Length: 101
Image (cartoon, one colour):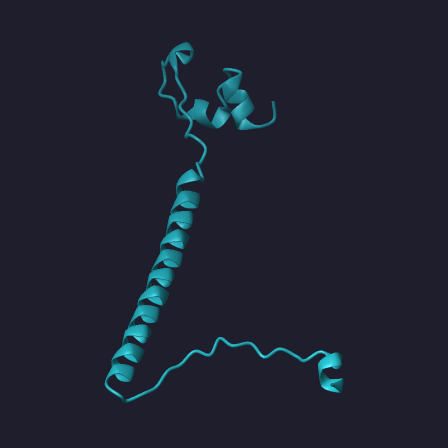
């Protein structure tokens, strides 16, 4: 029993607490209340919620920027101010047989 917590669990009153008791106090009726250990659940959950919120905000901003850019290209191409084409044809290499013929 070297730690004060061990003394309190065993029902012993440490001397520094015993000195603070008023004279004539029945030591058998003294109740010592300890503070509960700190819980880290709250700060961890708060950190996860803040991180998830920041990721969500960034995804929404990226989606809105994509929609605005698409709308701007559509308006400019419809008004004749800009042309935007997507070429999906692939350039295939010719086989060596086709080149020799």
